[in-house]
Length: 104
Image (tube, rainbow, N blue to C red):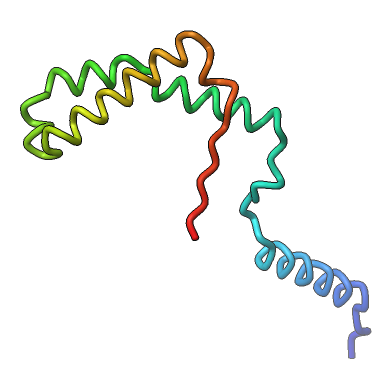
């Protein structure tokens, strides 16, 4: 009969434990995990994405279709929002703040 391989059992236990740890860990980032510098960088990136004039202009080009889907009040409100974001981010005032909303 072959001699029992203890090292193989040990390697299997360690590998199994590691696999269980990886599968059971929480991978989401929480608000407290994100530093202030990263929050500012993310806020700047979001402002740049919202500031793209292409989105505002594309909605204007398809005005009739958008109003049909959204309604005129919602369409005009979102256009006003996009113009405001563009004005604030162009002057650099929006990129310094982060607004956090929590659902309760």
